Image (cartoon, rainbow, N blue to C red; front, side):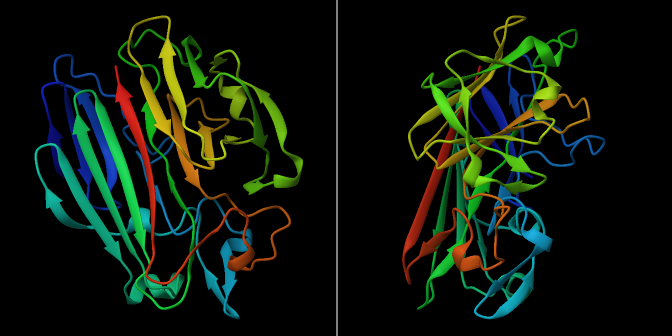
Length: 291
């Protein structure tokens, strides 16, 4: 386990999946991150690559060949190499090998950096295409936060999510695990969204952001603790498992979507897919402030 630390926070990152597993306040020892209780969800903050969400029948076609891949791809279950480590940052990398090519035939390099400054942890990812042919992929993140935070007597419903800018967003409905991009619906977030488990009875709330800088803040009236995640991505998901009464919520920056309900299975035409030219790079980032 890798550790970042400053005067305010101690952060732990697992090279397996380059997954953020813990963020603790040094003074109060308050744990902000979901601790992967398998009763509800056995992960903390997985990195989603080379797909986001689920493929129809867990398979896709590329260059005439069919490949099998489960939800959110394989990066979350692969050991990353530690490229650089210091007290305030760490850099990890995953590259293609024979095992990844059984699932995803492309050459790639996925580099992830976590940087801790004061009360903020920054995440930056770079996808490099070392090949002479385009790289087709999606990328996402899935950090989960404890709810409640710091008050065991508090309840899930004591918390709210505030989205800034405060406006009406377009939401991509999910039909089962699949995106229904042809039937986006408005979601009024001019006021905070009160958390309730029933909000997630049709899976995640997926907001279309169009790469505009957006902040999601988790807060409560019971205390002053919370988190604020800032991103500039095409989409963000807000999720807690249903019908489980799970004591956490995820804010999920997505540079991609689950297969559309009308997906053909062709990766090249998959909804919200990225096409990275030969020898080019793609960058993605988000920041979390803990208070």
